[in-house]
Figure 1 (spheres, rainbow, N blue to C red):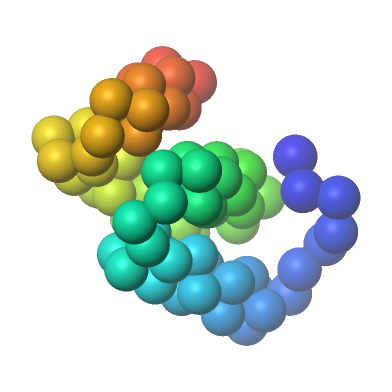
Figure 2 (figure 1 turned 180 degrees about the horizontal axis):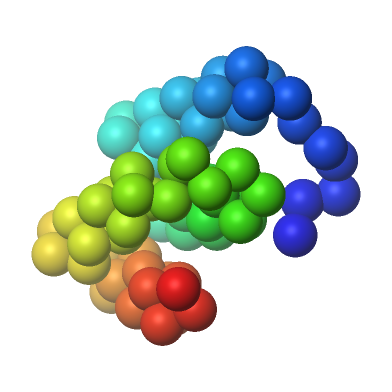
Length: 78
């Protein structure tokens, strides 16, 4: 659970930044942590849930073994 409470507009900005990192980063650590962060954000802001599910499923197909493992874990929590 996030430690801070974000307004909807702030949450949307954070979501955009994190998904941008997921798209351009080559570091699995950054990608896994960004996936976890947007998953946690979607728990507080449910409007992102569908986008998170789509992103997790996509990374489950194309990600590294580390990323795939985290995606499986997060999808099981839904």
